[in-house]
Image (cartoon, rainbow, N blue to C red):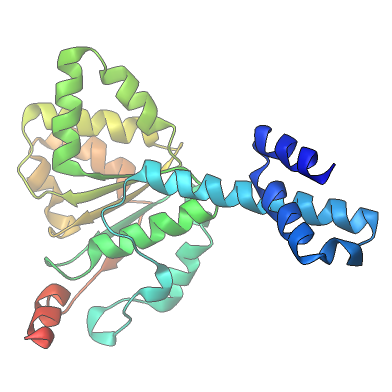
Amino acid sequence: MNEVTLEKMRKMRLHGMYRAFKTDLETDTQENYTPDEIVAHIVNAEWDDRQQRSVEQKVKNARFRYKAALEDLYYNTDRNIDKNQIMRFADCSFINKTESILITGSTGIGKSYIASALGYHACAMGYRVMYSNLPKLFIKLKMSKADGSYLKELSKIEKQHLLILDDFGLQPFDAQSRVVLMELIEDRHGKGSLIITSQVPVNKWYEIIGEKTIADAILDRIIHTAHRMELKGESLRKKQKEETN
């Protein structure tokens, strides 16, 4: 009868229950449970399994640049990273409040890693996250306008609780990029959160966007309610390379 039960669990895709019940049968631990404890045990196993698979799927869908964790962040006074600020971000209240985080600093300083670590953590907390290199996202959205899938792509982005835009200002904005960025920001304003990383200081973003009216509209929706991290110090990639040589 146990084999029949296991087969039914497998066919119903109750993978957590299946593994827990199978393990209990193999180790004879089920005899130590009362009936209600057995039910609670296998239901909890199924719950945990589904939660884990949900997180894994969210991480896969996000397409992060780095596999990153908040626990692995390198805190150093020279880098100007406030650990208390990071811990406040970790409760994800900035997502619930649809606030933004702007991370600036020189190349190799760890901006993308911090953004990815916050994104991974948000996935673990149950939020939908999308990571994009901004220049590549512009190319993708421009191509989607040509094949008629532009609105579908925007709708997909709009559904994310957190959108991470990496390498803002790495390339000058052309007219089409400005319009695309405006539509992205407008769609998310008051509905979803942003994390933006950039080598360019925030006070130079007007110049990077290039057209004053659109720049005003975009930055007015981003800057005033945003949390800022201005990283300092030398390139971590350069430092790690020197240490390995």
